[in-house]
Amino acid sequence: MKFLRYILIFTPLLLAMSCREAQTLFGYDTVAKVGRKTLTAADIAQAVPKGITGQDSVNYVDSYMDKWIIRQLKLQEAELIFSTSEGDIDRMVEEYRQSLLIRKIEQYYLDKDVDFEITDDDIEQYYNSHKSDFRLSAPVVRGYVVTVPERYRRREWLLKQFSTAKSMDSDKFKEAEQVCLKSNFKLVKYEQWVDYTEFLANLPLLRTDSNDKLLAKRDIQQIRHNSSYYCFRVTDVLKAGEPMPLFMAKDKIVRILINRRHGEIIRQNEERIRTNADNNGLVKVYRDIAIEIN
Image 1 (cartoon, helix red, strand yellow):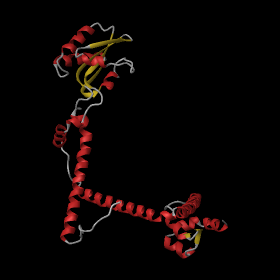
Image 2: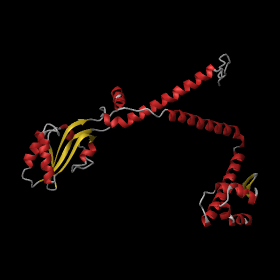
Image 3: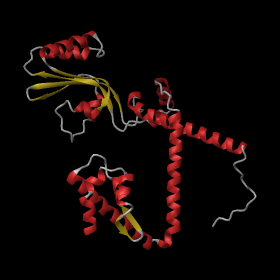
């Protein structure tokens, strides 16, 4: 340990040097040794991050050495325990190396052909051809919720405007909307499909209750709560099990189309390298060799 501490005293000097300079000063002096594995001053100089100084540098080197020692001890113990499985381990390491190389070459193919665009027409075409793959797991709705104080004397007129409006784009609806805006009444519109639970969150209802019965009506409905009327209308419903709207499926479709395109790129390059190898005589298949399979 005295030798190790002596090395650590010179850590700031070591860190200021290049690997070559450290080798010149310390030679290849061994800083630590585990079995036949050695750690040199040059190894440490190469590993320590640039810019680290003072006590931080001492702590880093101390920690680095401790981790190196533990790592070597683990490796030696593993080699001793699993010596009979050395062939299996070598095979696993080789398979992992090959997998890494294959992933890198496939990524190389993809990086060369990243200039492809998925258009809205591509998405819509895929959606129309695979609607059965995109089913709703819960109802979605369109509609609106307006909160009107109980004391508001024109409440019935306002509700009639909403109830007789054929759509949220109609003049009657826009007139009623302006009244809500001027009177500071809360009006929440869902012109796009939204989860039914999100719609219900605007109403004073218990989450534990079943509110599916509210989906059956298309007229204005009211709930009185705390001196206010929560007036709401479900204009459209898609139930669980029905095809989901295109915009809800869009992100998933984009991922599918990207993965499909990636698969095509990889397959095309596999065909290219196989064709080139066959043409150049690099591949030979001996089909008349019998293979015994246990």
